[in-house]
Length: 91
View (cartoon, rainbow, N blue to C red):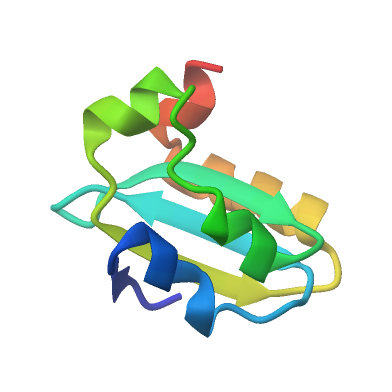
């Protein structure tokens, strides 16, 4: 997955497809801080960062990446195991 610089929140999701997949939100150092999955990446990325998620707010999301997949639950768990993102641990 290649990280893309996060544009304004309203523009971030414009490049995401309306398909199932996983995504990674990263800080300014491109360190993954959250891994998520969705049935619709376009809609889900338009909702991030979640204003109610203190960890994401504190980390200041700067980059994001996404991957289309038809087994997003399995892929999400693989990415969480690989990256051990802080905001997944604090939920």
